[in-house]
Image (cartoon, rainbow over all chains, first blue to last red):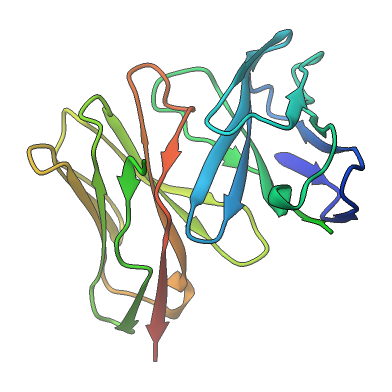
Length: 113
Length: 113
């Protein structure tokens, strides 16, 4: 059981480039989300989805796009990378039920130069 | 505005002793609280949770206490083991959204021999 899989593990981008961070889960979870972790800031919610075709913004959505065409996949797109987007990105999933904890992937470390 | 705060960035405890990690929150609408543990280069993993209708929840060596009037929760680890050395994140959610979490900034616990 793979759980939540994120690719790539590491990525270096130049300012202005675009890229997609991939996230897939095999637990048939309805809920998926993206967080970023920055030093001294904890984890902050970027976007989330409660099911295929449904997405919504979190605390820090600017500069990111998401879509949810299948239950399993929830890619995060950086439209035009900026140095402020240098961070570690975590994808997480869970059942849509009260008290169902999030399961996290191992993260993508992104550096924008 | 940080709604969930962990004011101690780090904590060092001897093996076998009790570790106490603290967390404060400002939003009185939070009704479900969780602790996550994170090792380097891995995603956070769920540790223990507590509903606002309880003041204590225990799971083996881990106990979480909730003081709603003080908007404070704590995680007790007894006895502490070297494998407990990690970053611990406190998280909180609103009614019906146990997946949409607001995280604290984390406390790095080091358990020494």
